[in-house]
Image: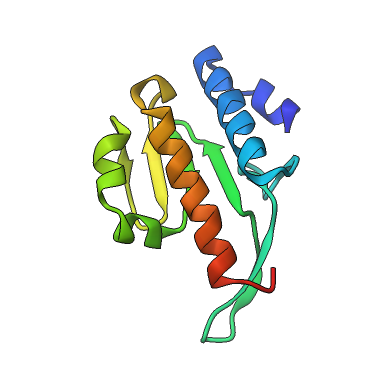
Length: 129
């Protein structure tokens, strides 16, 4: 993971990645690992959909993509508490992702709350993990 972060071309992105690493480690108690070639994950859970599709995924994760950082979260958190996104700061969001250019544009307390609630929702949705 450290080698992956160190390869990021911009110092600001590397610093933001390290801040996210600290946050996700604090919330999961887990060590970081590479989930595929470009996602830094923390913890794991096993999911199984009604369709029969199943697999393993990180409890919390982020990825430094070229245009912006991607922070993965359980989409139901956004549906249940949409005000969190309005308080977050400069970002865009999809069903399960938050896209940010810089963490400096975020309210880190709100981001921490979102990630914490996402982890809790994953554990509630997939309790056998």
